[in-house]
Image (tube, rainbow, N blue to C red):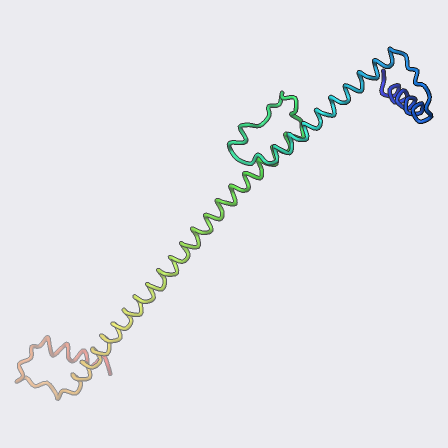
Length: 175
């Protein structure tokens, strides 16, 4: 019996019930009608279970639950079920990537803080070196001023020729 014939038969039955008529359906047609109703009920139950399978698949977002997925030859497997599984796989991949990026961000933040700390330490070292060099330069400048304030070096002081050259070099360097 075709779908059209089945619909006509069901419409006829509905009309007879509505008008309280005696339903007189040939046994052959009644048997076909009952078989079709039973087939539709079975299909309805199967579709309900396929929908349930999609709902369960949507919650299976762990590595262990992936192993429990339906195989493609299972009665309740459908293209929609596979679509849900694919979406869950994408979600798990994105979640994993998100965790990796957050971990990397935290590591970079720590590395960045370490780099800042190193920069501050280096600045402190450079400031200490700068202070030391200023003190040495000031001491050198005072030594040159002291040498410049000495009266003309006399030969009797017994300074060596090398010391005299160094003193004369200091005097020329600051004038």
